[in-house]
Image (cartoon, rainbow, N blue to C red; front, side, top):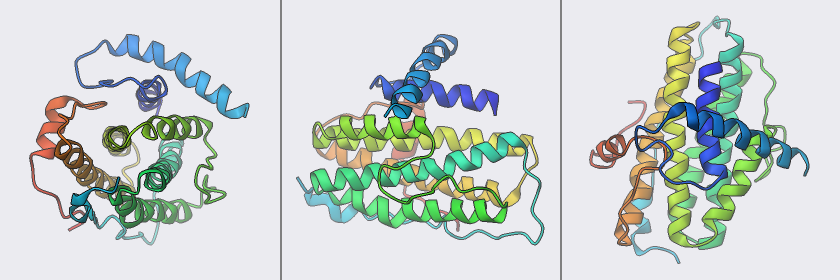
Length: 253
């Protein structure tokens, strides 16, 4: 997971410094990773030291990431695959918690629908896999804003702060989270395929990524209905455009 961790820290650095366009161009990855190391470290240090839209009715998002088949005998995961699985478990909690917090701030049902209809299910899927592989669940307390990973704690705090500035900023935070998840989950899938090839985990990651594409469509749709052109924040602009200009997917079908 060394390459995956470097990329993840680079993206976290973009969020921590509240930058936009972290991965939307062919920027110098080496420079970004160098910046990331310091930014991610500062997040760890800091964490350890311490209008409803009329179109909301169209924002009811569902996806079928909850259906996974648990094999009778499980694959032995590598250390990297284990770390990624545990990270994704809390990463889904991050999305849920940020969206519920922003729903309480703005009352926009897009946040509530995605949090309760999808992100909670994604958390449950990953929780099932944590149990299946007899791992220690990082979600010790299922309280909003509580995280075992100090990097995710710092990211939660930064994204809530950013999303509380205005409704549009809140929707942009939603777009950032979904782009971040899409990027992270693709790398997790690649890692698993190159490693022990755990079929159940790969299916779960694939379905979660499908859900994230649907969520990105919802957030971008809300932003552009408000008259703002959406600019990619993590993944290339062409990838974002291809996602939002294609129909909603039926995940897990």
